[in-house]
Amino acid sequence: MARDDGSLFIATLDQMPHLADLSDWIACDPEMAGRASAVRRNFFAALAGSARGVTAYLGDVPRLWHIVTATPQTLPYVISGDRGGLPDWGPWARAIALVHSSAPTPTELELAA
Image (cartoon, rainbow, N blue to C red; front, side, top):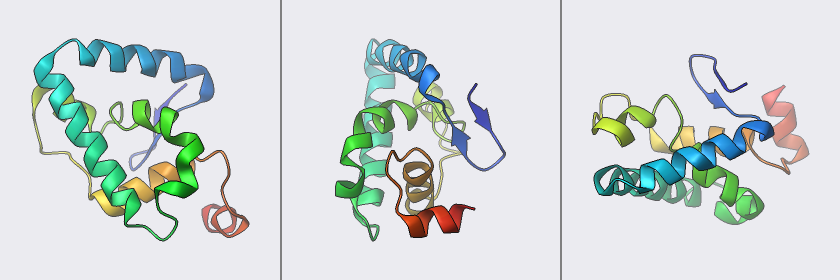
């Protein structure tokens, strides 16, 4: 089950179909779709500025696409436009990408341990 430990949203592979369904539902509303697009742009722009960049996570982009709009930090904004809980994009994007990476480096695994 997906959980929020107070600082980071963690989704499991069995939840991905539900997150994809959520993305499809969001896409049906033009305002929510626009805000979801803004979240994804900010996420991937922040990730592109990281040391590993987006290319290190290319295999994970389809999953990250759905995950980043479903987090407790972003979903309230996507649904209602409330910007109050939006994250600091740089550190947050790196953390989300690392936690959901299918191929973290050995150094990243040591840092996460």
